[in-house]
Amino acid sequence: MARKIVITSGKGGVGKTTVAAQLAAQLAKKGCRVILCDGDLGLNNIDVAAGVENLVTYDLVDVIEGRCRAKQALVKHPKIPTLYVLASSHSAPERYVSSQAMKVVLETLAPQFDFIIIDCPAGIDDGFHRAVAAADEAIVVTTPRISALRDADKALTVLKSYQLNGLSVVVNMLRGDLLLSGECLSPKDVQELLKTPILGVLPETNSICEGDLTLSHVAFRILANNLLTGKRRLYDVTKKYSGFFGNIRRVLKQRL
Image (cartoon, rainbow, N blue to C red; front, side, top):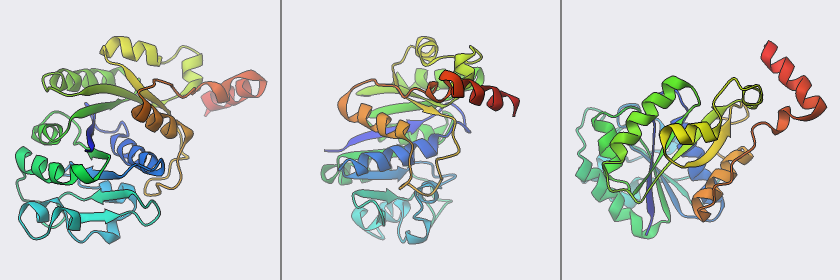
């Protein structure tokens, strides 16, 4: 039976959709059978993030309205055999989708998969509750900025009212140079502020190409392994800024 995990955030712009897509891809590369589900019926762009937008025939609304079976709406990733994408509402973006309808679709698919990763709309509006109601666990994505943390805390407060099996935080866009100089909050600081365990740390990087899940950063592999094993190993964002050449790199980075 699949673990249904919603990836959410208190605000937009923190990289939530990229985290959802890359995490799903890494789990699939480890041999897990994974569905990457678009729970954001407004923006509905998880198929773009996964690079399969031209392969979508049916979507979540088609399943709910009986035009196809749930498995027919799944798009198999062409390069990652055990990764499937469930688009949200391209066929009928104006349709209302209830929490119960979405939950039924995912529960129908769950016995045949190991993970269902649900990309959730940012914020805590109706779309947030629809996506969370279909999940058993939640991961909140934030950056170390105070504004993002404040919104993440609001999302966590709401999530704690649900009876979820697991709740954790991923700190995204963490700059190692700023961490070394004490100019940004550390993962430990974030954990203490949000009173929620940190599942993973992801660096600020341009090496993650949206739409190409075959290329990934080691930090995502560590994140996926933590999710699988229950460990809490954190990627060291300061490593590239340590030592003689690292100090030079840090100076150059801060001057840009």
